[in-house]
Length: 198
Image 1 (cartoon, rainbow, N blue to C red):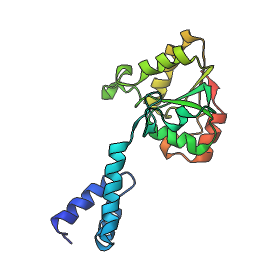
Image 2 (image 1 turned 120 degrees about the vertical axis):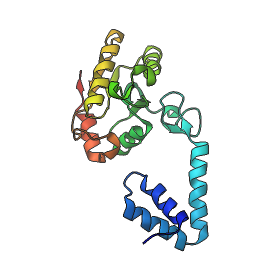
Image 3 (image 1 turned 45 degrees about the vertical axis):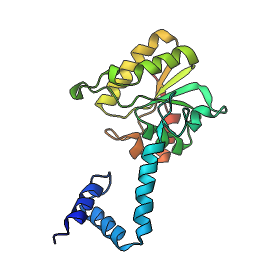
């Protein structure tokens, strides 16, 4: 069945969201049309407000509404342990595991020569500056268990060697090719507990 153009457009836009296939997008679009108009308006406002108010923490790269995110502003966090992740989403995943009480640094991605992404395109310089100024006793590399994640971890381990800091990597309790965001809390907690020195 062919829907009117505005409905087709909405379905196509919803289907671009992760985990939403065409059938789910169709159900969501039709639900929004049939529900009270306030639901659609509130959803649109929430998306607009989120995009307008959320920024990246100036220290770690996490999502925040202020210069520093709640984690960086929390004086109870162990600043001696710095966990390096790919993206802000990975910080959220690590926090759900409740297995890490240190602070974070999101690189903004991972080194991927095939995609033209080198250390210069990531927040590696900011990481090195933090290592020099904050002097953590341990850096935990919590990167995806794939080729680019491994390459990024090796690069960072080599860069960190002159800084006399212990460098560990979370245990590979994560499925190869998976991301932190896709992993469950128990797997992430065990991976943090089983990290090893590089």
